Length: 380
Image (cartoon, rainbow, N blue to C red):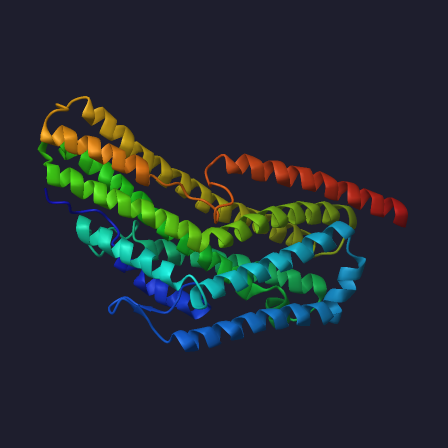
């Protein structure tokens, strides 16, 4: 059986991968030689990026324009702002460290496994449709993000009455852009899993009548490698995903709280700009979470669907035949290597987690409103 013609060869993400090297979201890896390159210099570069982030926190802390507003901010905003800054720092340190100081072996396993799967399935290098092409969609998302970041920094600068350049610096534009790229990378890798699971399901359903014992064994090997790769992926990006989810909660709570305070206290002409900027920030935070959770849930369902299809086909085959015995072995193998995405072993990621996030946001938002009311009563 000739397995061919799926979309999206892993080598097609090399340009994105090399671009992410600039931010050390990915380690410096040579796809042609299958080895890491300039590891010592990348570690030195990683230390510089972490030091720049620490310097940014120090500079923002002593900035007179910001500290003046920070002192008069509501207690709830101070708490949310501090947690947000700490989360961004932790995410940056973890992302850079996992691309330079540790987990390099797992990166090697992740890349080699995808290349091995593509070789076994004979997946082509390029996507022929421009609208399905990843880089076309990435370009559109970049345009939207640049417009959003530009408007947010302009509104922030106008409110603080500082220059736009200074607004870009204190607004942590690089951190937000790094998170955007991190979410893009995670989303791309999840789509790689989903497409390959779908490909296996399609081939199994369409050609099982022509399958030989070797074909069933071949599919079992691919399914096993996919399961191992899911586990490797979860170990590599689990902590970063936790930071993204935590930042989503903090950003949503602080955004709603900030809009509540703006409506009550702000009468300046930048009122609508701040309101719009906060609304856009909320939408972006929600989008970042949705493009992580739903694709992961979809990939997990496709992995489980493969096992369900095996059981349905088993009912139509003679169990005593060689093909029937091979299918039984495939089912047992699939059960052993069926994996779900998890956040570094802390919890599994599926659509059900959305309700937990909404519940936490609602709870802490109510607490923040009560803190604001108590503070206003004392001031009054």
